[in-house]
Image (cartoon, rainbow, N blue to C red; front, side, top):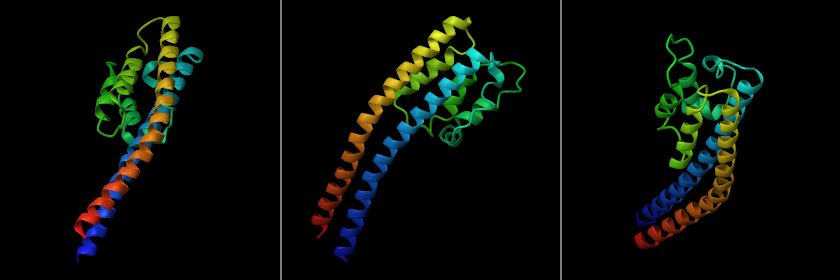
Length: 167
């Protein structure tokens, strides 16, 4: 009986460490998905002069669809009064996103500059936020790889310690 309990504890902590590593991978995937959305919006505004209300209609990304951000953006396309849907979409999908506070702020601030200024200033703002998010992605790649290994190692170590203590 003790051996079975030790095995269960080892398995639990190992899986818990793996779960922590998966969260890091999801955070990176979400950052990359938002970067793709940023670049898409920049191109739609600069080259096609797409109206803000219909801009999100043709963008597809599985990560942003799954977390509910894109459906929330698209849900206001036919509203008579167009309000700040970017922030409301970010708030409504906050529980599904794994972003850090800095990444959330960066994404929210990007949405604040859409359609609020003239073309050149808006384009410069887009470039700034795209560069900032790229830096965040590079940091996330480095930290994420390190943290995935750390979580797995800690999970295995905690599981082994728990198993030893039970036996």
